[in-house]
Length: 221
Image (cartoon, rainbow, N blue to C red):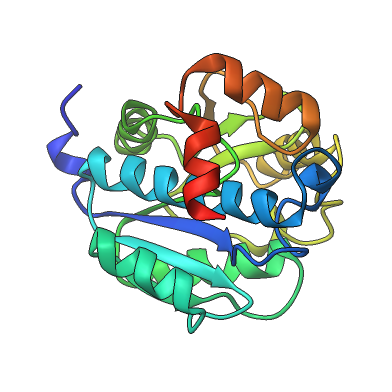
């Protein structure tokens, strides 16, 4: 699928947590150990950046927590030729709102993704940009766990991100309610899945989405 020409002014933001042992992929530590769980985080960051760059929609930025100065994240951004930015303080909603406001001041569209959904493709990002170009105010990819793995916007509204119970199975439902209450037209693309828990890791290993996954974890550990 070719990126829609009208969507070329779409900024893609990849939200990422630093791959620090003990702080990254904590729900997978019982299965993988702290070091290999952090290695998985690093592999997922790389995959998300490849996907974002392959979409060819516009500038890609890696928004980092806790800091854009983390050496592994800096090197990762340099390898992919993308800008690196520190996330602001606050909960996930506050940080996403800040990213949306900042991006839409310079671009006509913004797409925000995380690093937990390796099933997300460049074509998915292109479809999201095209939906925005075709008159939708927002576009989302729901997650099987009740959240979402992508949100695309043409404008921002703080109500989309305030007082959401992030990390629960009510995130997508609450977001739908907010979108309806502000009168926006939105599109939902097919539901996808995150890699957060041991069963998700087993699903990832069986999927073949990341070839030689175990070897990659060993190399990055």
